[in-house]
Image (tube, helix red, strand yellow):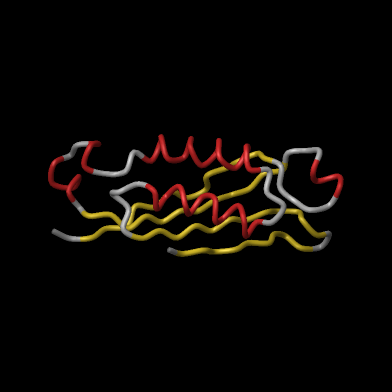
Length: 115
């Protein structure tokens, strides 16, 4: 059996994120890029049961980040990574969280967390 990487690029989540008082009262958009190391069973079987249901995972990540009301993008990455690693079909995962417009003159800030 081989190993493959399943990538979810550009998962957009509108949630409370930030430490400044005005950031605690309005949703801001995060972009997540997620890479999941899984075995290749679904490549052979062509069955959803043999891989990660990424539509479901994306929904769980969105819900968790909305509920978490994180102050730091580092924490948002940890929340998302923990959800990914909770799936028994995921061997390893990498989550990149990007927040645009956080600082005037800075296009974006991002953090990548692996586990």
